[in-house]
Length: 163
Image (tube, rainbow, N blue to C red):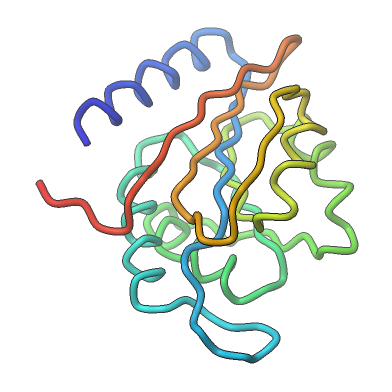
């Protein structure tokens, strides 16, 4: 965990030094095994969301974007509470507007998306690396340093860390 945080801190300091904002993109945490159309987070998912909130507390996030689905909103809640930020909902129908909003940022942002929307978002932000997110994978963190030539840092995080 310490090496992951050190790497993240280095990336953040490089981004801050260049005065370009960065965007952290994650898939929602593990969802309930509920056949409902809009399930919330499972117990493991809530723990992962808490971990994400602890990880990003000092990351300079000023804006949080989620979709309209409970699982993305619940993933963002722990960090939003810590930072006193009200997440902005961008509906699936309007997700094409999100890259423009992100490029207009004056600070850093968190985007909580879905396995099928994150690859196209990253591509729209200028990342050429092909991204695939398996259905069972909830632990990837994509950090994009915006700018003339966007850069991608790809990390993983577990639902629970033990110090």
